[in-house]
Image 1: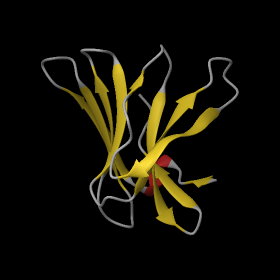
Image 2: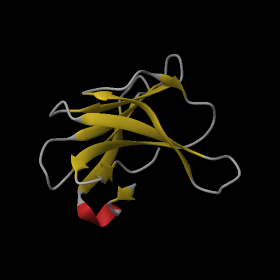
Image 3: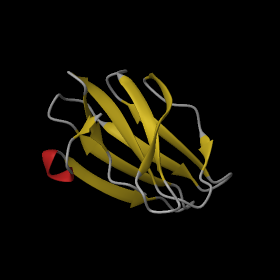
Length: 104
């Protein structure tokens, strides 16, 4: 799976007053892919504004890379327990290429 480097798109994260964190990326193919961490329940979810295939990757605790794709669906993934590790949301932009949010 080819994944774009962070320089390939705009990215950023914000946290609301409830502690929910959202990280977004704007792939060159348009739309917005986002990673959501819901403080209540400690869940992670990925979404895509153009209803493309979106999935989550979870960082391996041993530091050897990413596990994924996890929960791939059109528009949004299921929500998953954070499990004390880093996550990112990735969207399929065609041709075997993916654009991912910054990890959180």
